[in-house]
Image (cartoon, rainbow, N blue to C red):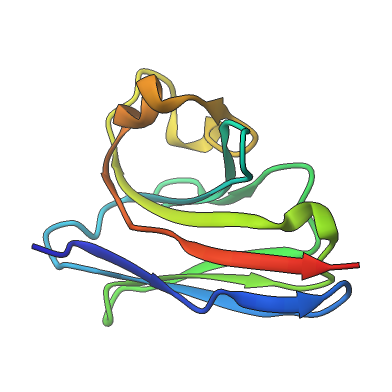
Length: 133
């Protein structure tokens, strides 16, 4: 059964914008939800997190350009991406229900390999973002 569904990815030129959405099943929508991204051959990188307790946090590489938000009435997480750069290219994943040992707020900038994907209980299937320079 589908629990997290991302949408909104696509191809855009550098400097452009995209808005990603992550629709969550009601019981998956949780206090700590995040966006990660992964380029081919690279580890999965935490881009932004929205924690009910501490609010939004961002990786340094996207601060000032990306905005994470959530609509609890719709059980949906968003990522508004502006001033996109070629290095933003990758598959973007939504994650929910943080069960890692550290704090939710520490997720942005975190790089994880497959063995550590379990720090979040739920993952979406990913949506591709391609930025051409």
